Image 1 (cartoon, rainbow, N blue to C red):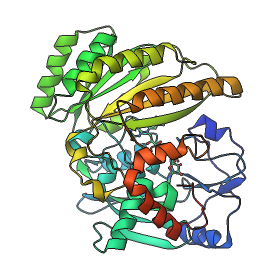
Image 2: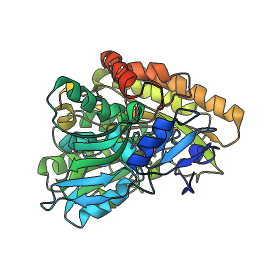
Image 3: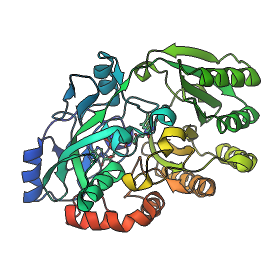
Image 4: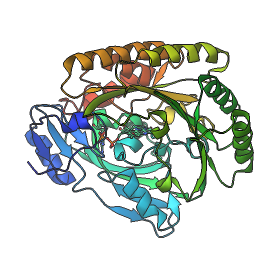
Length: 422
Ligand SMILES: Cc1cc2nc3c(=O)[nH]c(=O)nc-3n(C[C@H](O)[C@H](O)[C@H](O)COP(=O)(O)OP(=O)(O)OC[C@H]3O[C@@H](n4cnc5c(N)ncnc54)[C@H](O)[C@@H]3O)c2cc1C
């Protein structure tokens, strides 16, 4: 048992775990063979999800021991320890003029990469997981592994596919090797929009064939957040055209930043009320196609959901995919929904220690999830919920016909259920 740093997720941070484990891979393998009880073992990389620590369970905290960042001589590859945050990875890489596509916040750790990693740059650079070339770690049965991509024999290929998108159920990844990208300046346009302007922006974005991506957050206000490469003329022209169409408001701003390490915070324009007290939250992320003609009914449904949110922190947001993220074969990873254009996510929030508030917000989350499933049938398992009623439905929607093979992999690599259930 060791000391541990605070977790970013307040719900996980307020839990009372059985204890904290911080060890290298060999010691971890030995510990697993001796048996860790009770299970499942929680795993903490960045500590931003609600399920990296839980009452009465052990947490493996990767943040203390797994912190290496080794850049290849040519700069085209990097090995990162699974305890680094994306901010730390970008900071290390930018000194060599390199980068990897990260999300809308740089707080998350390797859980971001292992669960897919949807970036505002995914339309031109793919998902973060699409850059993985090597993985090291310990399976749930205690066996250590070191794998490189691509691996040709069938069984090896299945292990690789399982780890890319379903690692939390199979193994503890202690190090990831990734291809890097050239660090390229970005242009970010942020604004506050009306409901009609949101619809116009979504309609325009669904026609884009370049690097620009639209993100939006709907809370008390609606924030638009558009990102493109500064050297992509087609994207810059499209962003300018949309800006002209929508017009300016007091909150509008266009900034050029050297890379994602300097991107402004997403979502800050969507709410003017500073968070009161201590909040807990759960998040469900969905994946689906372009909304096209269904956009008016989706916007009406979203408006209803937002007007009924039980807590001011409850929010619905979305990221845009397509382009490079759809170019990887479905059979290569456990991220099956390669045809997705939108990832909306629902953030349900309540005051810590308010049981009734928790129930109200989780009911709202479930209702919003049912409504959004109509438009986005897939799930992005960026956050896992084995402690909540919809876990199995999420697994089905995330993994579909790949789930039986994942279960076979689990029965071999995690036969005693050390890690969360599939
Ligand atoms: C502010 C914020 C912004 C975000 N923006 C985006 C975004 O733009 N795009 C996107 O795709 N996602 C985004 N996310 C979601 C985030 O990427 C996922 O929740 C991710 O799983 C968090 O990773 P972590 O390492 O910080 O979390 P943790 O809470 O430490 O881990 C998350 C889960 O993954 C498992 N896990 C973590 N590390 C390992 C490991 N090394 N081996 C095996 N299992 C492991 C754990 O069991 C845990 O259940 C965002 C989250 C936050 C909080």
